[in-house]
Length: 285
Image (cartoon, rainbow, N blue to C red):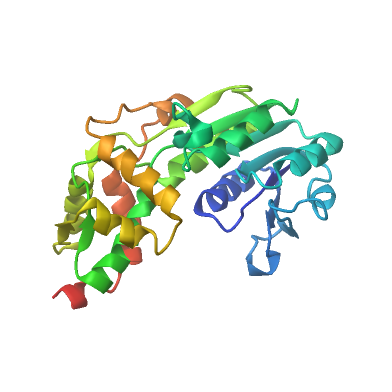
């Protein structure tokens, strides 16, 4: 059986591919720019833009049983129509914990994920939704603040999140695709412990062997920084999330329930990603 993995340049997708291949599954990977991919031996790379899937979806989905799908609302109706026609039997959707917001259609963080979840659920194709919370990998962005401003800029250093290692998401996604279990379910995913941003910085500092300074900034200053990389509505919603994250985030336990082992700690993630923070020691002295 062939599994199509979309968004193949992403860290989670790459992990899913590795795990499916190790289990003996035939894998096809897809990207809007397949020339940028470096597929493993025996893996076919195809073009598929999830924003405009009409031209390429039929070929990408040929003989495909399962799909690992990134959430892209713009072309979801056309993709699902092609998937139905191709006889796809299981979609594992990488959504977001933001889709659980009280009014997801009005929340810029949640709206597109919610729209894709609804479309997949109504498609008639068996599905499983994965809703990860904060990715531990988001902290890689701090490197550029450190190199640019000399410190990490935090409006809410005590905000509580349970950051998840991308490998745990890949483990769960691959396990669900391989087993065919958890049909019709929405699985909440997060890391094994809730911690503040300040605690994450302390762990990174310990792993890297030198202090990573941070500066508490105003919401307005943080908004100005965020809107260099995202629209203001999205940035405002993200700041609201952090502002209200005053209590420890409950740990879902989904990784252990699906894989039989606890999720990887933030320290493990930091150890795995030390090279991503290379170059900080010299500028920080």
